[in-house]
Length: 190
Image 1: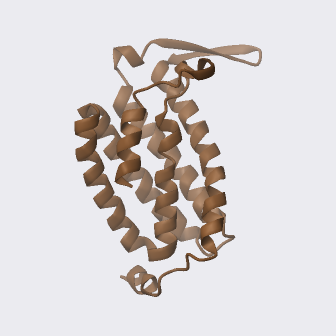
Image 2: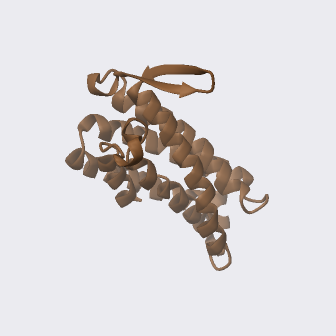
């Protein structure tokens, strides 16, 4: 968890220069969704109490590492967004865990990602002169102009949606042998 968050905090500073995506995506958009998969697999196996502990430890270590690898503003934004998004994912996952196998991880990841994205990009880049320049995106019959960081947030979230859908493949594959730990029911009752 810590490695995923720390790597993402570094990678979010680098736009994707391929195919003209530099104004819509950073490399962090592709690494960070792995945190939701880790969270959901941990939750399935060990339950919400243990998963919250993993999130708290991951949060503390990732913020410390991110202060060293990225700017303090990105570390603060990342830590706040991570904590809120991951804890939200845990709550949503637990409410839906008894439904169809794919609903809990998909809904938890999507809702957690939406909140995480809004918090992170707002705290990390709003008001930053380099990230607030206007960018115009063409839509069908119209165009919209937004600050660069808003565009990055929107396209970052689109990547997270795609990753949440793709993460169902490994999640489903692990379900066959990743059974809930017998102590998870006891831990969940606490």
